[in-house]
Length: 316
Image 1 (cartoon, rainbow, N blue to C red):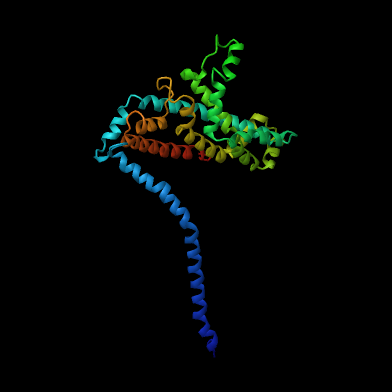
Image 2: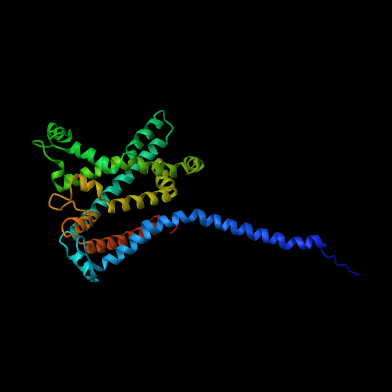
Protein backbone atom coordinates (compact mmCIF):
# COMPACT_ATOMS: atom_id res chain seq x y z
CA UNK A 1 0.00 0.00 0.00
CA UNK A 2 1.50 3.33 -1.11
CA UNK A 3 0.63 6.74 0.04
CA UNK A 4 1.06 10.03 -1.80
CA UNK A 5 1.67 13.27 -0.07
CA UNK A 6 0.44 16.48 -1.56
CA UNK A 7 2.19 19.75 -0.87
CA UNK A 8 0.80 21.89 1.80
CA UNK A 9 -1.45 24.68 0.57
CA UNK A 10 1.00 27.41 1.62
CA UNK A 11 3.93 25.73 -0.15
CA UNK A 12 1.92 25.12 -3.34
CA UNK A 13 0.87 28.75 -3.46
CA UNK A 14 4.49 29.85 -3.00
CA UNK A 15 5.81 27.94 -6.08
CA UNK A 16 4.45 30.37 -8.72
CA UNK A 17 5.78 33.23 -6.62
CA UNK A 18 9.32 31.81 -6.60
CA UNK A 19 9.16 31.12 -10.34
CA UNK A 20 8.13 34.72 -10.96
CA UNK A 21 11.01 35.99 -8.85
CA UNK A 22 13.51 33.87 -10.77
CA UNK A 23 12.14 35.19 -14.07
CA UNK A 24 12.34 38.75 -12.77
CA UNK A 25 15.96 38.22 -11.72
CA UNK A 26 16.81 36.82 -15.16
CA UNK A 27 15.13 39.80 -16.86
CA UNK A 28 17.01 42.20 -14.63
CA UNK A 29 20.28 40.42 -15.36
CA UNK A 30 19.59 40.62 -19.10
CA UNK A 31 18.74 44.30 -18.82
CA UNK A 32 21.97 44.93 -16.93
CA UNK A 33 23.90 43.15 -19.69
CA UNK A 34 22.23 45.26 -22.39
CA UNK A 35 22.86 48.37 -20.29
CA UNK A 36 26.61 47.68 -20.12
CA UNK A 37 26.89 46.56 -23.76
CA UNK A 38 24.94 49.42 -25.30
CA UNK A 39 27.67 52.13 -25.04
CA UNK A 40 30.24 49.83 -26.65
CA UNK A 41 27.81 48.76 -29.36
CA UNK A 42 26.98 52.42 -30.05
CA UNK A 43 30.67 53.34 -30.33
CA UNK A 44 31.39 50.42 -32.66
CA UNK A 45 28.40 51.36 -34.81
CA UNK A 46 29.26 55.06 -35.02
CA UNK A 47 33.04 54.74 -35.33
CA UNK A 48 33.31 51.53 -37.38
CA UNK A 49 30.16 50.24 -39.03
CA UNK A 50 28.82 53.57 -40.30
CA UNK A 51 32.20 54.69 -41.76
CA UNK A 52 32.67 51.24 -43.30
CA UNK A 53 29.30 51.42 -45.05
CA UNK A 54 30.05 54.98 -46.17
CA UNK A 55 33.44 53.99 -47.61
CA UNK A 56 31.87 51.05 -49.49
CA UNK A 57 29.24 53.41 -50.90
CA UNK A 58 31.81 56.06 -51.87
CA UNK A 59 34.07 53.51 -53.56
CA UNK A 60 31.38 52.88 -56.16
CA UNK A 61 30.43 56.52 -56.72
CA UNK A 62 31.82 59.53 -58.56
CA UNK A 63 32.50 61.49 -55.38
CA UNK A 64 34.91 64.42 -55.51
CA UNK A 65 36.16 66.46 -52.57
CA UNK A 66 34.56 69.72 -53.70
CA UNK A 67 31.86 68.54 -56.08
CA UNK A 68 30.20 65.94 -53.90
CA UNK A 69 28.45 62.79 -55.13
CA UNK A 70 27.66 62.75 -58.87
CA UNK A 71 26.24 59.23 -59.05
CA UNK A 72 27.39 55.63 -59.20
CA UNK A 73 30.31 54.68 -61.44
CA UNK A 74 31.28 51.18 -60.22
CA UNK A 75 33.88 49.80 -61.03
CA UNK A 76 35.56 52.87 -62.58
CA UNK A 77 37.19 54.00 -59.32
CA UNK A 78 38.90 50.63 -58.82
CA UNK A 79 40.16 50.59 -62.42
CA UNK A 80 41.55 54.13 -62.15
CA UNK A 81 43.27 53.34 -58.86
CA UNK A 82 45.04 50.29 -60.25
CA UNK A 83 46.08 52.25 -63.36
CA UNK A 84 47.48 55.13 -61.28
CA UNK A 85 51.24 55.49 -61.84
CA UNK A 86 51.94 55.48 -58.09
CA UNK A 87 49.80 52.44 -57.21
CA UNK A 88 52.21 49.59 -57.89
CA UNK A 89 55.33 51.47 -56.67
CA UNK A 90 53.53 52.31 -53.42
CA UNK A 91 52.41 48.68 -53.01
CA UNK A 92 55.94 47.40 -53.60
CA UNK A 93 57.50 49.95 -51.23
CA UNK A 94 54.93 49.22 -48.52
CA UNK A 95 55.54 45.47 -48.76
CA UNK A 96 59.33 45.95 -48.67
CA UNK A 97 59.07 48.25 -45.67
CA UNK A 98 56.73 45.78 -43.92
CA UNK A 99 59.05 42.81 -44.41
CA UNK A 100 62.15 44.70 -43.26
CA UNK A 101 60.48 46.31 -40.27
CA UNK A 102 58.76 43.13 -39.09
CA UNK A 103 61.90 40.99 -39.36
CA UNK A 104 64.11 43.47 -37.50
CA UNK A 105 61.55 44.54 -34.91
CA UNK A 106 60.36 41.08 -33.89
CA UNK A 107 63.93 39.71 -33.78
CA UNK A 108 65.15 42.60 -31.65
CA UNK A 109 62.10 42.47 -29.38
CA UNK A 110 62.62 38.74 -28.81
CA UNK A 111 66.28 39.29 -27.98
CA UNK A 112 65.45 42.11 -25.57
CA UNK A 113 62.71 40.05 -23.93
CA UNK A 114 65.12 37.18 -23.30
CA UNK A 115 67.69 39.67 -21.99
CA UNK A 116 65.43 41.37 -19.45
CA UNK A 117 63.94 38.04 -18.38
CA UNK A 118 67.21 37.04 -16.76
CA UNK A 119 67.60 37.83 -13.06
CA UNK A 120 70.21 40.60 -13.17
CA UNK A 121 70.66 43.70 -11.08
CA UNK A 122 69.95 45.86 -14.14
CA UNK A 123 66.70 44.12 -15.08
CA UNK A 124 64.38 46.80 -13.71
CA UNK A 125 66.41 49.62 -15.25
CA UNK A 126 66.51 47.94 -18.66
CA UNK A 127 62.78 47.28 -18.71
CA UNK A 128 62.02 50.89 -17.81
CA UNK A 129 64.51 52.33 -20.30
CA UNK A 130 63.21 50.19 -23.16
CA UNK A 131 59.60 51.10 -22.42
CA UNK A 132 60.18 54.86 -22.25
CA UNK A 133 60.02 55.44 -26.06
CA UNK A 134 56.58 53.80 -26.19
CA UNK A 135 55.20 56.71 -24.15
CA UNK A 136 56.06 59.11 -26.98
CA UNK A 137 53.50 59.52 -29.76
CA UNK A 138 54.54 58.39 -33.23
CA UNK A 139 54.09 61.87 -34.70
CA UNK A 140 56.21 63.39 -31.93
CA UNK A 141 58.88 60.71 -32.39
CA UNK A 142 58.88 61.37 -36.14
CA UNK A 143 59.41 65.09 -35.57
CA UNK A 144 62.24 64.31 -33.15
CA UNK A 145 64.01 62.09 -35.68
CA UNK A 146 63.36 64.62 -38.45
CA UNK A 147 65.38 67.11 -36.42
CA UNK A 148 68.10 64.51 -35.77
CA UNK A 149 68.37 63.73 -39.50
CA UNK A 150 68.38 67.39 -40.53
CA UNK A 151 71.68 68.34 -42.25
CA UNK A 152 71.44 71.86 -40.80
CA UNK A 153 70.79 71.22 -37.09
CA UNK A 154 70.87 67.44 -36.63
CA UNK A 155 73.89 65.45 -35.40
CA UNK A 156 73.53 62.52 -37.81
CA UNK A 157 74.95 64.09 -40.98
CA UNK A 158 77.99 65.65 -39.24
CA UNK A 159 78.66 62.34 -37.49
CA UNK A 160 78.62 60.46 -40.80
CA UNK A 161 80.96 63.10 -42.23
CA UNK A 162 83.44 62.71 -39.37
CA UNK A 163 83.37 58.92 -39.72
CA UNK A 164 84.25 59.27 -43.40
CA UNK A 165 81.05 57.65 -44.61
CA UNK A 166 80.06 60.78 -46.54
CA UNK A 167 82.11 63.53 -48.15
CA UNK A 168 79.99 66.37 -46.78
CA UNK A 169 76.86 67.00 -44.81
CA UNK A 170 74.15 65.20 -46.74
CA UNK A 171 70.44 64.81 -46.21
CA UNK A 172 69.98 61.16 -45.24
CA UNK A 173 66.28 61.49 -46.08
CA UNK A 174 67.06 62.68 -49.60
CA UNK A 175 67.53 59.18 -51.07
CA UNK A 176 65.16 56.23 -51.18
CA UNK A 177 67.44 53.85 -49.25
CA UNK A 178 68.39 56.51 -46.72
CA UNK A 179 64.75 57.44 -46.10
CA UNK A 180 63.73 53.79 -45.78
CA UNK A 181 66.40 52.78 -43.29
CA UNK A 182 66.10 56.02 -41.34
CA UNK A 183 62.40 55.32 -40.89
CA UNK A 184 63.06 51.70 -39.92
CA UNK A 185 65.45 52.92 -37.20
CA UNK A 186 62.74 55.26 -35.92
CA UNK A 187 60.11 52.51 -35.79
CA UNK A 188 62.43 50.02 -34.10
CA UNK A 189 63.38 52.61 -31.47
CA UNK A 190 59.74 53.53 -30.90
CA UNK A 191 58.14 50.07 -30.77
CA UNK A 192 60.88 47.66 -29.63
CA UNK A 193 59.90 48.09 -25.99
CA UNK A 194 56.22 47.48 -26.70
CA UNK A 195 56.80 44.20 -28.53
CA UNK A 196 59.43 43.23 -25.97
CA UNK A 197 56.73 43.48 -23.30
CA UNK A 198 54.35 41.25 -25.29
CA UNK A 199 57.01 38.60 -25.80
CA UNK A 200 58.21 38.89 -22.19
CA UNK A 201 54.72 37.96 -20.98
CA UNK A 202 54.84 34.89 -23.21
CA UNK A 203 58.29 33.92 -21.96
CA UNK A 204 57.23 34.20 -18.34
CA UNK A 205 54.34 31.86 -19.07
CA UNK A 206 56.69 29.00 -20.00
CA UNK A 207 57.20 26.71 -16.96
CA UNK A 208 60.76 26.57 -15.62
CA UNK A 209 60.37 22.83 -15.12
CA UNK A 210 60.41 22.36 -18.90
CA UNK A 211 63.80 24.07 -19.17
CA UNK A 212 65.17 22.13 -16.21
CA UNK A 213 64.09 18.82 -17.74
CA UNK A 214 65.72 19.76 -21.05
CA UNK A 215 69.01 20.67 -19.34
CA UNK A 216 68.99 17.41 -17.39
CA UNK A 217 68.54 15.55 -20.69
CA UNK A 218 71.63 17.31 -22.03
CA UNK A 219 69.98 19.81 -24.40
CA UNK A 220 72.14 22.71 -25.49
CA UNK A 221 71.16 26.36 -25.40
CA UNK A 222 70.26 26.62 -29.09
CA UNK A 223 68.30 23.35 -28.89
CA UNK A 224 66.31 24.66 -25.92
CA UNK A 225 65.60 27.87 -27.82
CA UNK A 226 64.56 26.14 -31.05
CA UNK A 227 62.58 23.24 -29.59
CA UNK A 228 61.10 24.70 -26.42
CA UNK A 229 61.12 28.49 -26.37
CA UNK A 230 59.95 29.18 -29.92
CA UNK A 231 57.16 26.55 -30.04
CA UNK A 232 55.75 27.56 -26.64
CA UNK A 233 56.09 31.24 -27.53
CA UNK A 234 54.13 30.86 -30.76
CA UNK A 235 50.90 32.56 -29.55
CA UNK A 236 52.81 35.67 -28.43
CA UNK A 237 54.85 35.67 -31.62
CA UNK A 238 51.65 35.38 -33.66
CA UNK A 239 50.09 38.36 -31.89
CA UNK A 240 53.25 40.46 -32.20
CA UNK A 241 53.72 39.63 -35.87
CA UNK A 242 50.11 40.43 -36.74
CA UNK A 243 50.29 43.77 -34.94
CA UNK A 244 53.63 44.62 -36.55
CA UNK A 245 52.56 43.63 -40.07
CA UNK A 246 49.25 45.47 -39.81
CA UNK A 247 50.89 48.62 -38.45
CA UNK A 248 53.57 48.54 -41.17
CA UNK A 249 51.08 48.07 -43.97
CA UNK A 250 49.14 51.08 -42.64
CA UNK A 251 52.26 53.25 -42.23
CA UNK A 252 51.52 56.94 -42.70
CA UNK A 253 52.69 59.30 -39.93
CA UNK A 254 56.40 58.53 -40.09
CA UNK A 255 56.73 58.83 -43.87
CA UNK A 256 54.39 61.82 -44.10
CA UNK A 257 56.53 63.74 -41.59
CA UNK A 258 59.99 62.52 -42.62
CA UNK A 259 59.77 62.28 -46.42
CA UNK A 260 56.23 63.25 -47.59
CA UNK A 261 56.56 60.37 -50.06
CA UNK A 262 59.75 61.69 -51.65
CA UNK A 263 62.09 61.75 -53.33
CA UNK A 264 59.86 61.61 -56.44
CA UNK A 265 57.27 59.34 -54.80
CA UNK A 266 59.81 56.59 -54.07
CA UNK A 267 58.78 56.36 -50.40
CA UNK A 268 55.06 56.64 -50.99
CA UNK A 269 53.10 54.12 -48.94
CA UNK A 270 49.62 52.90 -49.80
CA UNK A 271 47.99 54.94 -47.03
CA UNK A 272 49.89 58.02 -48.20
CA UNK A 273 48.51 57.41 -51.66
CA UNK A 274 44.99 57.28 -50.21
CA UNK A 275 45.60 60.66 -48.56
CA UNK A 276 47.05 62.09 -51.77
CA UNK A 277 44.13 60.90 -53.90
CA UNK A 278 41.62 62.36 -51.45
CA UNK A 279 43.19 65.71 -50.54
CA UNK A 280 46.15 66.53 -52.80
CA UNK A 281 46.62 65.28 -56.36
CA UNK A 282 43.17 64.08 -57.47
CA UNK A 283 40.92 65.31 -54.67
CA UNK A 284 38.75 62.34 -55.54
CA UNK A 285 37.14 60.74 -52.50
CA UNK A 286 35.72 57.93 -54.63
CA UNK A 287 39.16 56.77 -55.77
CA UNK A 288 40.53 57.11 -52.24
CA UNK A 289 37.63 55.04 -50.90
CA UNK A 290 38.19 52.39 -53.58
CA UNK A 291 41.86 52.09 -52.58
CA UNK A 292 40.79 51.91 -48.92
CA UNK A 293 38.54 48.96 -49.75
CA UNK A 294 41.42 47.23 -51.55
CA UNK A 295 43.69 47.77 -48.53
CA UNK A 296 41.00 46.47 -46.15
CA UNK A 297 40.52 43.31 -48.23
CA UNK A 298 44.29 42.76 -48.39
CA UNK A 299 44.64 43.19 -44.61
CA UNK A 300 41.86 40.68 -43.92
CA UNK A 301 43.47 38.09 -46.23
CA UNK A 302 46.97 38.65 -44.82
CA UNK A 303 45.79 38.40 -41.20
CA UNK A 304 43.86 35.21 -41.91
CA UNK A 305 46.95 33.64 -43.51
CA UNK A 306 49.13 34.77 -40.60
CA UNK A 307 46.75 33.35 -38.02
CA UNK A 308 46.54 29.98 -39.76
CA UNK A 309 50.31 29.82 -40.25
CA UNK A 310 51.59 31.12 -36.92
CA UNK A 311 49.00 29.43 -34.69
CA UNK A 312 49.33 26.04 -36.35
CA UNK A 313 50.38 23.34 -33.92
CA UNK A 314 53.91 21.94 -34.32
CA UNK A 315 52.53 18.49 -35.19
CA UNK A 316 50.83 19.92 -38.28
